[in-house]
Image (cartoon, rainbow, N blue to C red; front, side):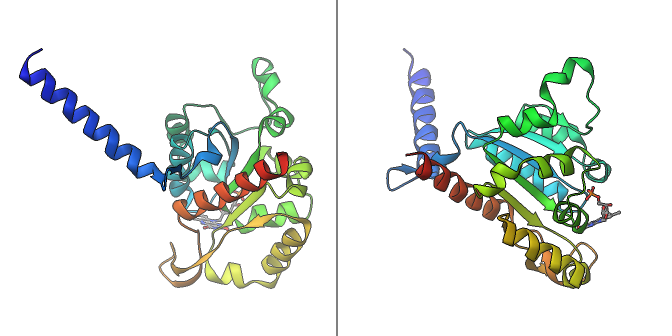
Length: 224
Ligand SMILES: Cc1cc2nc3c(=O)[nH]c(=O)nc-3n(C[C@H](O)[C@H](O)[C@H](O)COP(=O)(O)O)c2cc1C
């Protein structure tokens, strides 16, 4: 073997070691709970929808299977292809599936999912879930996934303008959903898409990932 090939092998080994150390803390893989977990990612029509692409990529890198369901408004803000590319999996945008897709109906997607995450969650989807409204694929899934809600496996990451978040109707819906067992992360304070500062910013993808890992760990503890 030439010296050149040997040096290439050494560089490859070094890169692998440093990558391993990035995902390991104290000998434990940081997101080991997400490995082989099925995550249904709901994306609604907030500007933060672009950050959901990052979240989908992070979940996929951690070993989770990710399928994405997007609302019509979400599709106006980010292209379904971005999610398809980072998750290497189908993206669902309508409840009216073709006969070939019949097996992957909204009910089959719920059966497949271990955890459902909606990021970003608009004021609209929060209101629809709180009131049992099912007028598209995502809202129908969020109504029919009651067993997952009861096992604390449905996480919502709200994102909206600060005045929308402060609206008593929105706050009432959030409280209702919390009482029913939906998990929430954020929103946080910061600069909002509309240019103002306040509470309404979606939690960062990394923080949402940590929250999902925690939910996964609780699910696995219950299974033992
Ligand atoms: C550019 C743009 C950004 C928006 N951002 C938000 C947002 O961050 N949060 C929110 O609740 N609604 C936002 N909206 C309004 C929602 O898109 C609208 O209420 C829509 O009906 C939500 O539909 P969905 O919940 O089915 O996705 C935004 C609208 C536009 C045009």
